[in-house]
Length: 297
Image (cartoon, rainbow, N blue to C red):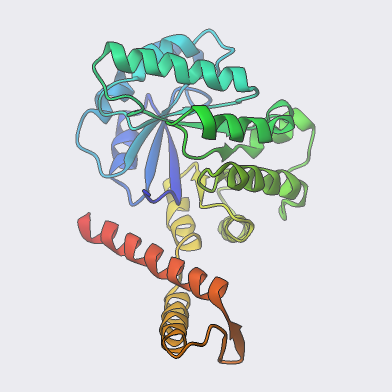
């Protein structure tokens, strides 16, 4: 499973920013055709993002198209389902029918252009009340019929606008919806979702708290809107040296106990059984995956 801690948005019509984003220490860059691009630039930007993604780049490259109910969506898909594009980010998903429509359209374009089936990933953003009202159905439909969909993302900006919520510093008003998305994703067998952006660029501490909160709630990563946010998000969704050391001690102690026929032990005052040992092994596996990516860069 590819690392999905940091997804950095970048306006698709700013060539220099696109180049930097694709070379940055992020897991994926999202070249935007939606909110960050003026209506007068949207059509012309399609070719620019495809050209950028067909050149060598470090990060996985996604394109956020315009919502399916806009005049741009069909043309966006026709233009950007192409070799070199790792995935499509679909904003404002609100129904199973929209999900199946997007999947069907991408599949036809893949076939027409000689691409492997499901080679272009689809990552929808749930960011309206209508979308959350059917979140269980969306996740189950994705797991059953949409092979290209591995995870959902949460978009709190449009969600707060749609629901007339006040987006507070502690994000208490988002807790129910975050949990619903994590639970529905897990129940359907999908990857853990990706959390919303943090819009206050002058509040690094707030970003760190938001990212830690999201990790604790079961998200695997976070959307970013500025390169300066990415290091903090990478750290928040990566195990610390202390966590890795503790996980290694847990795994080693439990392995010794298991060899002696014991499946529950105490380590440094804490109870260790199979779930705890499995979680520790997961930490070590994830740390190894991060190291492998760093060494390959």
